[in-house]
Length: 474
Ligand SMILES: [Fe+2]
Ligand SMILES: [Fe+2]
Image 1 (cartoon, protein in one colour):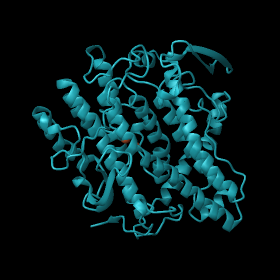
Image 2 (cartoon, protein in one colour):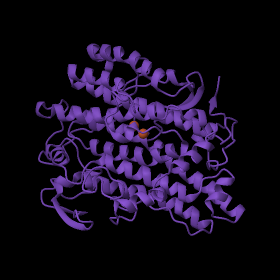
Image 3 (cartoon, protein in one colour):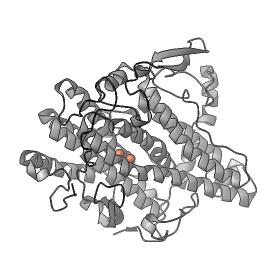
Image 4 (cartoon, protein in one colour):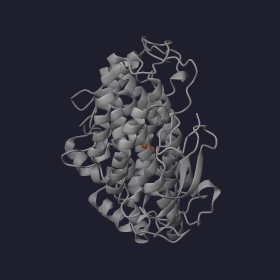
């Protein structure tokens, strides 16, 4: 169904045919806008920004671009087209027709999953609300705001499901999604990572590379759901999400590129020399990578999870790309992994495959993360240097699961807590690292100009030149 932009709430779900639902969402809309003005990007609400807006749900040519003030962005409800006669693709219900309403026995589980996903969307906007003031270029400023408005739309996507399928409880949850705030002492966001402020652009690029990618894999699992409206909603969110990871991937690549230029010019790899000219040394980039990768790994949950097993068994949440597996019931296999033995060593563990679904998804995520790291390393090798960026071991700096709280070095070897403490400044950003990165955060607002710590992008947005005026400030 085509997207209707004549309505107050743009949608492709024929919202006008359900007056009660339409009125409820029209009642929520001004509250969302209040939240956006209060908790969204600070100070840039009057700026005109070159943003894309969804115009259809086809993968090809699905968006249009134009100068928009953020509060006037057309947030709406867009579901991927229904697949005729779609069947549940996994678990005990394999092969049965998908559900177009919430089965009573799965109501609270589905509501919790939707709320948890929905909570991350506005959380990231809140985390990033001050970043506009220190943008390295207008191109980057535009990308930040594009990510922010689309996270706002992802909130709409989840709120629609809550309003349309969960009655009064759903409407109350939708209110709560605007009442919790990132980092709030009394009402924090649900997941830990989403309460960490993102106060510098290196963190922003790491977040969009690693944490938005966690989002991608959660959405891929939910896009398999037997609850068809959820599956279709997540399917379209994935189309938008790709740009967020592109921003992270190319952002880190551009920082690496700029650092390599300085290393060549100065004929030095000494961090003090690199920092002396206002660029970011590669070991510091590695420490930020260690921090954000490990904190994003926790978002997948524990290795062994009876919840994950029951989501799979009941058809609520599948594996990413379930179609690529042969055994969609996953009743036979086991998953082997290594856990700590409690005496500083490692012990082999084995669990039924269904209980290891978090680990299966985390494994797919890690393989996806490696692609960018390889690309960044190619830049370094091409410039003639031997330094290599690496993903730390998934055991490193975990707070949940088998390795939660264990002292482990980035290669995955258990170490004493004293050794951990002594080496932490070499493994994760130290206060001095963070202060240095913060000292680089000065706004660059002239079209085409870049901050000294980041190279320009290879091309602009939507085939426009890099020096296009992506943001008109007022
Ligand atoms: Fe999102
Ligand atoms: Fe995202």
